[in-house]
Amino acid sequence: MQAIVIERLGGPEVLTLRDVPTPEPGPGEILVDVTVAGVNFMDTGARQWGRADAGVPFVPGVEAAGVVRGLGPGVTEFAVGDRVAWVYAYGTYAEQIVVPAAAAVPVPDAIDDETAASVMMQGLTAHHFVTEAYQVRPGDVALVHAAAGGLGRLITQLVRLHGGTVVGLVSREEKVPVAREAGADHVLVSTGDRFVEEVRALSGGEGVHVVYDGNGAPTFRASMRALRRHGTLLYYGAFIGEVPTIGMRELPASIKVCYPVFRDHIPTRAALLRHSAELFSLIADGRLKVHIGGRYPLAEAARAHRDIEARATTGKLLLLPSPTRAAS
Image 1: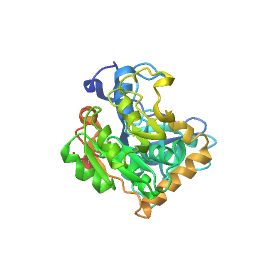
Image 2 (image 1 turned 135 degrees about the horizontal axis):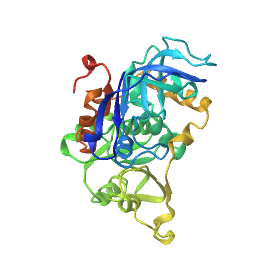
Image 3 (image 1 turned 180 degrees about the vertical axis):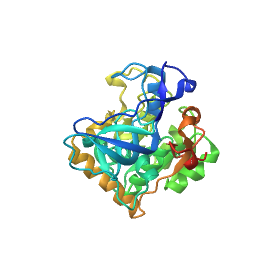
């Protein structure tokens, strides 16, 4: 089989297609034919700085969907031929992968593989942000950075479904219609920290209830200033620069700063099954829409990384191991 292998850390050029042995499922594991692999910004961080749990060489990627090809000893919840999706099983930039059965969820017939792969990371993350890390209530005003991106579009839709109002930030004028299509009530074009006054004006001068900011250092302090009293800043930029050091006295208006950890949303298999089923139900009912921003053959993973780092796309980027299914 073939897989993208990182043999040295660096830029997109280190993503190399290699022939590798087909893995064998061990106890509690399933062998899956990967049909779609999601591309996430965290993958670019692993490419540049490595993985904490493994040295080079390694196969990148943490989410995908596919079809069960084989079962390891003790697996009873799946059968060969079942459609599954998963997140945080490393090595998804490949034609086949061994996944812990406990990390996989069944994909309903109403959900295609591209959609399933698209929401395992970003969909569950958005669900976490809106229902647990900060519980959006009717009347809340949310500021969503990168509102035209895959995660931003999902956050926007979920905030609206919970009765909130969304102020979306985008980096370019051409992204405004994309954010509006996702449901943003107001869309501002801004780079850096030049958005605070406009955001406060749109929220009646008081500031917003919650900010979702994955930009890191360039916007961290401005995002704090955009909050109202007792507002909440959700920061989620693990690989996007260092956040400035702040003193407790610098936290204005009794605000709260939260770094939501994805795994805390799915600490058990029961939680994973419950939350993924909720997302699939919202999608099947037409209440949550997934936008695919680009499809790439597995061999063109480097191009996908260049595009995501350049913020040249909107929506979710996918790798398709079968070349005939991929089109940019």
